[in-house]
Amino acid sequence: MGEGKEILKFDGGEEIKPFTDCTYLGTKIDQLGDNKTEIKHRISQTRKAINALNSIWWHKNITKNRK
Image 1 (tube, rainbow, N blue to C red):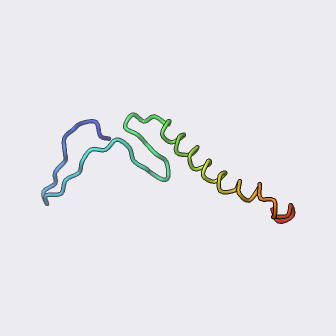
Image 2: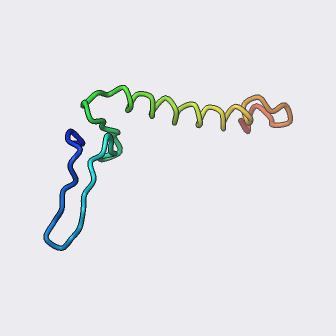
């Protein structure tokens, strides 16, 4: 996974360039197989969801029953 700097070439002239990370089945995988990028990605998604909900939770004109 991106170990070498060489570009793979096929008979039809297609090229595949090396990469450092990818997403497979919703999980981010990096070149070293480390899970730090996956953890950072999930924390980022959670923060976005919490920030979106905070505007509703702290809005004073919305009743408790509706919240």
